[in-house]
Length: 148
Image (cartoon, rainbow, N blue to C red; front, side, top):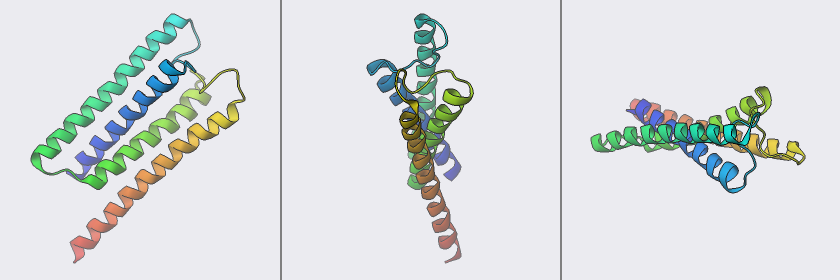
C-alpha cells in the first residue's frame, strides 16, 4: 500500500499546485493564463481546462487516500513525500517546460523575469527534494524494521 499512498500524495500535490497556481497567479493577481499566445478568451478557456485538470488530479488523489484510510493502510510518509514530490515536479515542469521550452506563458509580464523564474523553479526544486528526502527516509526505516 506504500505505492498507492505515494500515488495519492503525488496526485494531491499536483492538484494542489495547479489549484494554487490557477487561483493566485491566474485569477487573483492576473499575472498570466495557462495559454497566453492568443486572445483573452482563449487564455480564459485554457485556464478553465487547466483548473479542471487540477481538480481531476485532486479528486483522484483524495479517492485513493479515502480508500487507504478505509483499509487502514495509508503510509503517512509516502503520502507526505508524494505530496511534496508531486507539487515540486509539477512546479518545475511548469517553470521549465511550459514557461521556457514551449513559451505557453511566463510567471509575470512587464518585469525582469529572472527573479521570478528563479523563485518559481527554486520553490519547485526545494519541494521535490524535500519529498524525495521524506521518501528516502521512509525507505531506510522500512529496511531497518525488516531486518530487526
